[in-house]
Length: 255
Image (cartoon, one colour):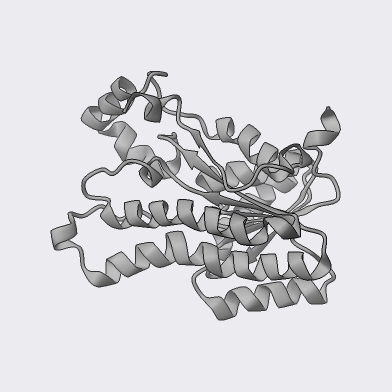
């Protein structure tokens, strides 16, 4: 059974992994034996994350690039090609949030959220998948969805549209690439305790709403996503594609 979840000998790229849930995904894959490439926009934050995982004995490196910039992304994969390194596992985690009513939302902010949360997954996956197809080895692509892939909330319209899109992009990729032994699936996290949600946790009204609306009665802990990520990245999920697994404590079940 252990071999089903063993990622030894595989290389994983996790976008937006310098902190938050992305860091947890990277840590989990590294603990399962993968060599992990962490990504972020800010070199200092990225290298701090690399140092944390390196101190645990994991095989990790950092690559700073903008996932919304197609030329930068292509350059990163060309660099990996020149180094003889192949991405076997990709987690498209990079994302941002912008809270504002749709009637007041500037087009530039709408576009920024769509580009970062949705278009980037297409850009990075296209580079990774083209190589997975060319070398015939297949691979795993995991797109990070959200509860808003299924349920809308006021003031996060752009994010909701992007995360609904990432759900359907996941299925489109699965439909096109399953025949090349590339499994494409999604993870939909619920409300988790991270640096990015600190303000929401400290908001007593919002904190109470999260706890009262969730059958589990609490926020999720980042490491509670690791098992799902390792499963979808491992041989255990070799016949699973086009699926979204929601890790939300049961929140969607009571809508």
